[in-house]
Length: 516
Image (cartoon, rainbow, N blue to C red; front, top):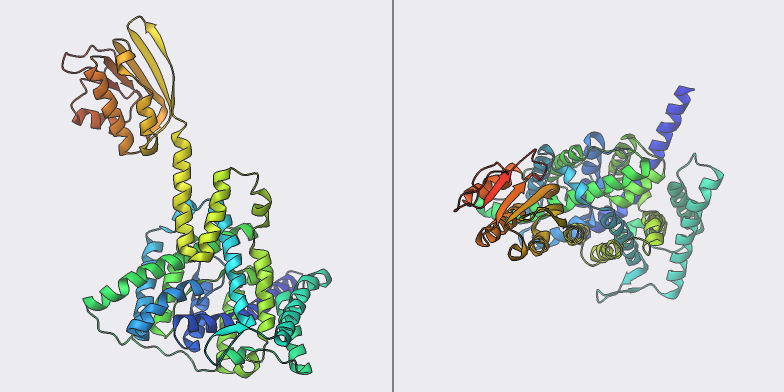
């Protein structure tokens, strides 16, 4: 029984890998053209990166290869400096990613909030959808692309619809065969045996080639080369890791498992180093193909390895067969991916969540469509952080001062004291209206940054100028040290009477106000 279960699981992984490999071909070729390199440069990258990350990565089931987000950055480098500069840049990009993984900086992805994540996946769904529309266009003699004529457009739409229908309906009959692969096979059979005139993979470019060959990029190894490639390598490394880690997080949620972020960073870097030496354009995780893989039932490393090996087989032996697959079938598969990628939950709750979170979702989705995924996520994190700072800055207050005796008032501070709440903090106290002695208790407050500590120093000076005896209780050691350096602390005993030149005393008393 256990043997049958393992055999069934392997069959699922095998078929899922085959499905993904078919979807990888046109994507790799298209992204190679975007980057301004030959189709085999994209295919080699898809094979090598997919194989290395599947074997060593931190997220089984995730598919990596050449991507459009990286291709749009590479095109200028290739056009200005040539393809060898691209290869050395990809190698440096990989080394940077390895360093990030070794330094365990991959966990910074936790800074991405749910509104940013929802905006990212929705924007990505739009980007994937818009990318497929290029398949509905034809290039004229003047080099300008226009929509297909009525007849060709009708055939294209019909084949896409058949592919999607097979993918949606087959799981109702059986789940033993990956629906996306079934859709590709059915539509390919219709086109081949009936002779339906439509665009195929071979119409885009030939994918025939040999094994990738090792070679050191032919560039001068000097500081000028470093000056040229370093900015590109940093940008590519950042984009690649952001896209990969967000895809990893998305798959974690779908499969209710947990990937290893830092291990994935190292694997992505190692894959890019290898592909740079073997004539590949570099890459990262591919969310569309990863969704196809997961939705086909794959959960282990087998499917990714199989997809990469199938891709190599296509290049070496089966190029003529794969080139007969209609583009409409692959477009239909990607349209299904779009439907599955959209976070429908976020669309249903967008009117129920706080307005700021809803705006962040829309903002990130819009930036994703207008620019690229990395810029959108970074911008979303910054906006989310500013929104959080704005919200928390309003929740700092003091309990009404209590007169413990006629000449003494006690305040208890609540909230977070940092750069955004400093102005509110300053408005909470008026030394000229307070009695001769004031106690401020920081036990229920947190001081998080230098701005907060400076605000306490400034408040202490205000009370000192007013001639008021001030006791500050439960301050952190950092705050006490800053007050000591400012020469406004007499001693730590809150009950001691200050001298005439120092009217501020401080007590740690447990230091619960510490924010560092």
